[in-house]
Image (cartoon, rainbow, N blue to C red; front, side, top):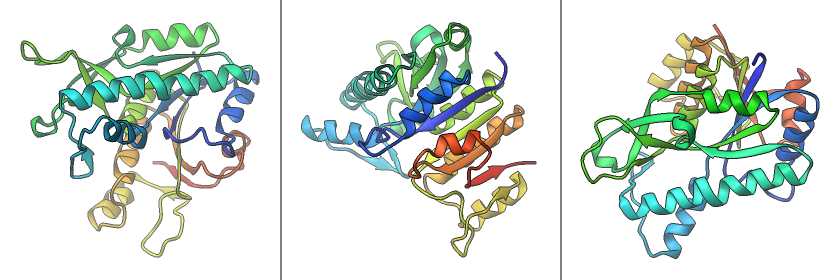
Amino acid sequence: MECITVIKIGGSTLSSRDTTVEDIVSLQKQGKSLVIVHGGGNTVTEWLKRQGIETQFVRGERVTDGPALEIAVAVLAGLVNKEIVAAINNLGGKAVGISGIDGSLIKGKIKNREMGYVGMAAEINPEILEILLKAVFIPVVSPMSLYAVDRPAGASQILNINADPTAGDLAAAIKAEKLVFLTNVTGILDASGNVIRQLTPEKAGKLVTSGVITGGMIPKLNACLTALNAGAVARIIDGRQPHALMQEFAGEGSGTTITE
C-alpha cells in the first residue's frame, strides 16, 4: 500500500485523441498503484436537458434537487464511470468502478441547504480502495457519497459531491504519495498568464485573495493542499498533452507543483 498515486480526470477524458487511459494501463503494467477519481458535470448537464430539467447554478455549483440527483447518480456512477472502466479493461488493464457510496467509502453531509443534495465528505473509509489495490485493480471512483450526517427522515440516502475535493480527501485518507490533477490548462497561472512552476500554500492563499486564482481552479488548489498536509506531492498538469501521465511519472512533466 505504498507509493499510491491518486489521479483526478475530467468526465470528458475519453476523446478519440486522448492518451490518458492508454497511460493509465501502461502505468499499471509497470506496477504503479493508481486510484482514479473522475468528474462528468458536462455529461450530467446534457442528460438533464434531454429530460427537460433545467440546470441551476449558484456560485458556479449545480443545484441538485431530487430529479437532478437521480440523473447525476445515473450518469456519474453509471454511464461515465463504466465508460472509463470499460476503456481501461479493453486496453488490457484491470479496473473496477465504484462510487463513494460503495463500502461506505465516503460518508457525507449537506454542504449548503440552498444547493439541495450537494454534499461534502465528513468521513473517509478507505478499506474498499485498499482491498482493490492489494488485488491489483485500479479503483475508478465516481463523486457520490452516502448522506450519513444529519439526514432528515424521507431524504435521499445519496449526495452529489465535487470530484476535486474528493480526490484530495481520498489522497489524504490513503496516504498517497502523489495527487495529480489532469486539467485543460497548462497549470496554475500568475497575473501575467505564465505557469507557476512551484507554489507554496502561503503564496496560493495570496493569489486567491487577489483574484488571480479563480473559479474551478480554487477547489483543485484546496484539494492539493489537503493532500499536501497529509504528506503527498500535489501536481496540476495539462492533460491535453499527449502522454501527459507518462511524462509525469518519468519526471518530465510540466505544470504546477504545490509544495511547502
